[in-house]
Length: 496
Image (cartoon, rainbow, N blue to C red; front, side, top):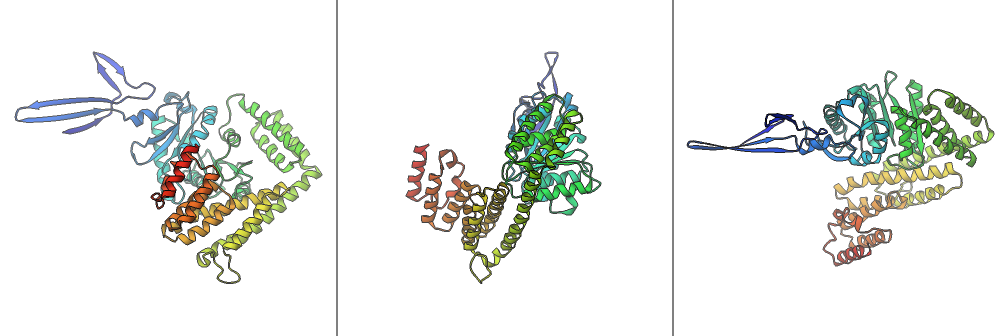
């Protein structure tokens, strides 16, 4: 049996050329030819096809979750081609290469497909690249980039980069290492930890920085903004009201407008809408946030009367005594935040040694952390919004630090340490569902079944239902045979 894989574009049929590429998609075509010879029978299977994957890749207006790279099939990515995209008009489109910190390629592609339509941008996000390995990020990024460029006809000078959290750092590194002359949309994190992967005075791309005011990395991006200004690189820091997550659609809309511009009247309409929001902030006395919004509008409104009006509004607002008072309170809160951060960053370093136990009078044990979290929770409820934001960001960073550390202890079967860190994570109430679910799993691995079921019951009371039960089933390995698990599973199913 001989297997031949052939790629064809046009086939002669009945004396007529039939173009098998319809909107870039060629359905699989199979020919089975059996040839009998004297004393020898040979079956030759001729497979003439573009794989179904290739047919998918050229489908417009649909989010494709898993597109295989033709040259490296193990590398896959999510892809979105705007509905009006065609290879013949590829020069009119940009490509946004996205890095997702947990390799959830479809997540940002689905979230921002409306913006892809609005700004004529193709979205591609690797399903392989994730936090933890520069080599993995670069190999995945290169494979996806080459595959998309080959299939779409988009040129290299129209490639932009974006990412969230660790993916943001990968996006910046990719722009630096490829000598990009376009732009980066950096979400929820700043520079890579490798100095050679950071922008220099000679860099040619502009950066949109996006971060929520409740995000643990908010302060870091303030420092990045200052560095970019010092280096003379164009940038815009767009702040929203969210924590450590992919930016909301309005914030990303501003970033797309900043990077890709607009060929329609939508930009003027959007700027008027955002100006109304700024006016609302001014009326509420939230002058620091209002100035942020005005600064964005100056950058996004383009040249003309509108830009001049926003510049005048900025000068007028910053001249007010109320603004100066609000800005001073804001800076005081940032100074206090740095003080708090330095304290618990030092405490983080002692955890491997102290194991969160009271080994001496200076040790930061579990009780110390729980008391700190109680203090930060109270701060997050403060009537002063700047102080409240600091409290939220501190809880955010403690919770996510524990979440990222727990797997290391579970991998080494140090379940006692994993449980202690998990208790800190739960106390912060950051991503509470997953914090409790992880605690159930760690209790079960440590054969603490009573605690595991008590926590699972707590999850049920918080709304853990059948729609989440399937996705979380791998967490219950050591308690599935227990009758209590069957009882709880039945209760969850019946209440759905």
